[in-house]
Image (tube, rainbow, N blue to C red; front, top):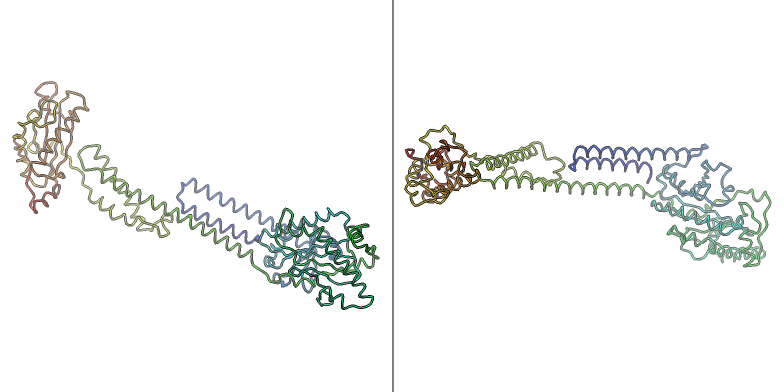
Amino acid sequence: MTLKQIQRLSLWSAALALVLVAIVPLAMGWRVLCVMTIVFLLALTWRRMARRKGQQNALLLANGSSLPPASYPHPVLLVCGDGLGGLFESIPDEHLALRVTDLGCYVRVPCVDRLQGFAMQILAKRPEWGGQLSALLVVDACAHSDSAVLAGQVRRFNNQVAMVRKRDIGLPVVVMCYLQTLSEGWFSWEAGHPRPVVREAGDCVSLREWQQQADGSVQAARLATCVQLQSAAQWLAELMTPDLSGNGRAQTSQPPVSVAFVARPSQGQWVERNLWQRWLHERTALSVVEKLPASTLAAQSPFPDVLLHLLPTSAARPNRFRAQVLGMWLFVLAGIVALISSAWQNTLLMRQVSDDLRRYAAISPSLDAEDSARRERALAALRQDALRLDDYYRQGEPWSLGFGLYQGERMRAPLHAAISGHRRPATVSASADAREVIRLDSLSLFGSGSAQLSVESTKVLVKALVGIQAQPGWLIVITGHTDTTGTEEHNVRLSRARAGAVHEWMARMGDIPESCFAVQGFGASQPIASNDTERGRSMNRRVEIRLVPEPGACASSAARSGGQPKPHSAAFNF
């Protein structure tokens, strides 16, 4: 991808990351840390891209050189290898050197190891050239005396090509080899054609046809050229083909588009007893012409324009497409994370509201202080839940609960119903009128230290029940009390058990619903006389029945009796 595409992709990634930070519920400290990290990484990426862009511009624009326009329609070849001085002018290696012909643009790569860098720099400047960029390796058969050195150069070239292709750049390869032959012309083995062809004067014929077209001495010279050409192909196959075909560590995965031999004198440094001389003499007993005069060597070596039709010329768009696909996948990934987070947060919200409703419903109304406190806390939690859901209803749910997954609206009605139906148990003050209290002596109801009703208690309870039935629909509060004899825990438990026994008898005998009763045991905490005397302790051992004027407390009783509430009230003269 180009530097501009990388910058845009980094901006897109940062924007998606910030949206996720806003959606995913995090503590404020973690949010600030995430935002600072995203901004830091974005700034670091842009700084590196700006530095690379500055380096590329400094290299490409040096010495007044400039590349053709982005709409340039012909192949662009990165040229590296031997004899570059015959192809380009004498320009220092740190400067850009290029030659533009009618059929292509040639850019010099001073060192094979810089091929990848030049490719990336050119694509950064001309991203439209991704589909028409190629590599040209020039081999001077007469400029090498060490086969290992030549094989190493080819191997490094192959590695550089492989690294470029890993970036989704095709980079076709053309190999051009200089030979000391007796005839001029281009001889090439092209991909998909097992036999060589000869390109000369705009014509393209097979090697056999080219040989048959001549006669006399010309035919003999062409025959010698064919022998040398076949030998050169075999030599190139032995020394270079394993590296060019990707048998080394880095695989190019594609063979060269063309392997061409040009009938020109050597353009590099002539080496006595070079590889080509030795190989040709050993295999064919032919000899290579010695170093030619300087005037001949100074002649400009031709560019392989006749082979450029084999290379792609249309400007492909793999990089832009790749950036778009990557940006789309980042968007999809961010969307999946946001949906998962929203689904999980909605699940937690529903679980919280449902648990609060169940906790409130599990606590029955009672005059017990602990139960009342628990019920009030549960009611406060319901009110907070209702306030939260009402805010979401009026202002819209937050992003963390949105994306069509919000489910809190269906919990608002149950919450408001539970809150509006809340009934706080009534309390009776100690200063209530004495006529409103039915005080039963425990000794007339229970045995000593027992909560079991005695046989004699029926008469007392019947008289109390008659008084209670005189007032319909009021709350019946039954409280048990003891003296200070025994432990506090025992007294509370005993007083509550005695009050519960009276409650069960009256509910059963008077057919009064459970909702009309409130039962509580106070132990010895509310004495009406001194516990220092026997008379005072006897008065403190009691069960009190109070009627609280709370209309509607026994509405269910009225419904059961056909609309007429069953009367119950206290007769207060005991």
